[in-house]
Image (cartoon, rainbow, N blue to C red):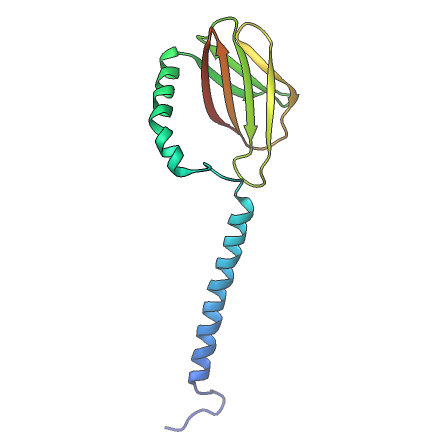
Length: 153
């Protein structure tokens, strides 16, 4: 049967081009994703994983002691953008400190000193910029310390 002259043959050169373009796309996407991941990583999780593993049981015991205190805290954002913290079960002489950092993207962290609004409510003096934050609270009262880390949308 005669070949149609408008159709070319699929040769080895064509197959090579299909493979080269396909692998080129895969490699380009991998490089792009790796660069995005490297730019969005905010830093070191732990300085030395071996030392962290040696301290792990101590951290668990400390967390258990903090849970046994029965203290609670709820973080929110006020209408003016300031961080608000409501505490429960904490002695009246408590001081509350907050450190906030972005969960993703370029590293951005801020320490906030919270001032008492009333007996169990505290608020930061300055507003937080818009966006998601991880809030690490530290409450000190009666010689005890309690910590909590939560996401603030």
